[in-house]
Length: 355
Ligand code: CO7
Image (cartoon, rainbow, N blue to C red; front, top):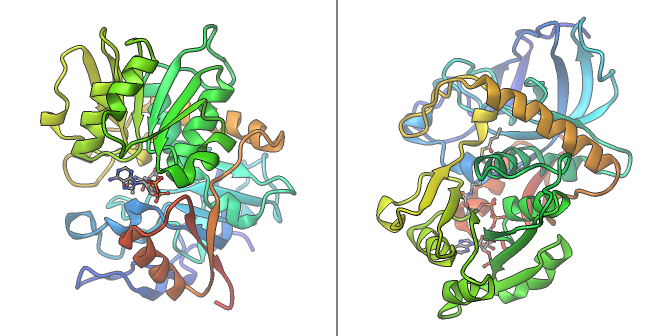
């Protein structure tokens, strides 16, 4: 099996005239460049961003989905780092106007740059599928705070607040920070305290308890300088800004945040766009449109090299999973589950069987 270009395959997305998502039988597998490889998709994760690809986000004929895992079935002539039969997971563009044939929710995926990981024997396909978008997001957030990755640990440990530590992005951010000699402190519901501690949180706070931001400010001696907001609501932005110490610091969120909540000049705020890590232009509507950024692409390559080593050593693990088994229709069910917001401390992954 070499170049499968134009092979007809199943996907979620397809020609969506009514703006809803559906299983399509007529996706065309993209052509393979010499430095790319094909993966037969065996599991996909559902991210909150998948459920938001409506209206102007839709690309006619576009495929949905960011996270996939499966087995390599064909490699381009220049590929030296994987062979047919390797199990890999990766992230890809979704609903991208310039590349509508890309999207994780398709029977075959094409590798995107170096944004993929080879799965060690002890890591399941489902666990693999839960990792890439979260790593892209958490990694970029850490970069935007000006903090290091685990390959170049901080000389002096510093506290970093991860607001929403029990989210799938939160548990990855906590681990990456701790492995970089930083001190992750976090917020979540009390039922998830043990969960976030098991990933390395040094302190955990119930964000619903009155005066919680002020308590963090006190416990950090009015010196906290870094916050990652994995939730990004006006309340979460207000909380993070209030927890930062007297001298201010940096705030990074996973979506555009409310300007009115970002109410301190001494705090430098920014937000990350997960797919920006591919380094090319984002075709999504404002404010998600972006120019390409080669430095970010290089960062992504490095991030995934670092994470590959950590996963092989068993030092980085994914979020607890809510595994759903079945055909592509189950991905639509998974999206409904994520949209309903009822998952707590679990990431929805669909193990594709009987397709
Ligand atoms: O990266 C990409 C591409 C790369 C190539 S695409 C982007 C992929 N990332 C996403 O789609 C995640 C974006 N994040 C969000 O949309 C939000 O931040 C939410 C809040 C949906 C979190 O998403 P995530 O998938 O990380 O979280 P989750 O579904 O695993 O977490 C849910 C938990 C709840 O259990 C709440 O925690 P507990 O401990 O209270 O149960 O999030 C918590 N939560 C809130 N916490 C405070 C939910 N709503 C909350 C709120 N305030 N309003």
